[in-house]
Length: 306
Ligand SMILES: [Zn+2]
Image 1: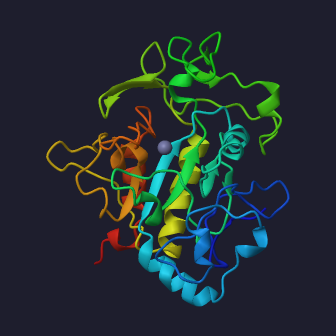
Image 2 (image 1 turned 180 degrees about the vertical axis):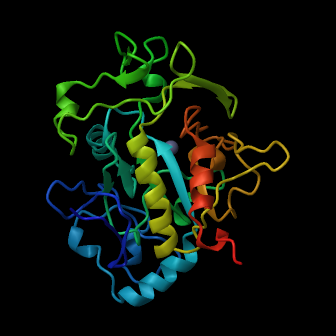
């Protein structure tokens, strides 16, 4: 099983299963673009997707890697508002511009959909330059679409999580269940909130109600963060943090365009301009303290020297 991620044909082992776009069972990004700071490709690919996969080649992969290392410094975390990564990919394919470098499925399987050299249009951010400086991961989670009361797109007939003993399980139809890499995987929310199970917090002005991601997703996400930091070191192992309130803020942060590290979509985009929408992902259930602690704990420079 592959455990490498890829940028400019270089690979880094991340200790988590990764299905690459060109492997069996891989999911290919339908809308790749060129980054404007990188010069090792045909620049007409920067603003429109090409019809010919062969055009997505790099003239000098070493030079491409140097350019990429200097221009990309953010990993943006999303929820996909879908049942699973295959569901998410279906929706990306139906769009003429959407894409994401990674999908993170319920069972912790990562799909890398193209070489990180390319740009995907996942989060323009409030300054419209968000995609130039970032790589993206879409984590499978229905968010408020799981709630009968709030579901807009999927119009579900009942809440999509059920309580099993003391855990909350996502009800996954056969259609999506059979496409998961792990046979018979059962998707439990890592944590439940009180009796109702779902979390509820205000993000960029909206109360977001959603069940948590799975433990398998958190493990894979942490492995992805370390792998990306090795491959693209400007993506530092840090998340936004308010030292006075001693927590990660949930709203758009002021230095969103210069922050080097790992952020949520909501941290970079609250829709200040007409054609940019307000974002709330990865949402109220996302466990920022857990991610933050994991990034710090494993840091080599946190070793106490005698
Ligand atoms: Zn998003």
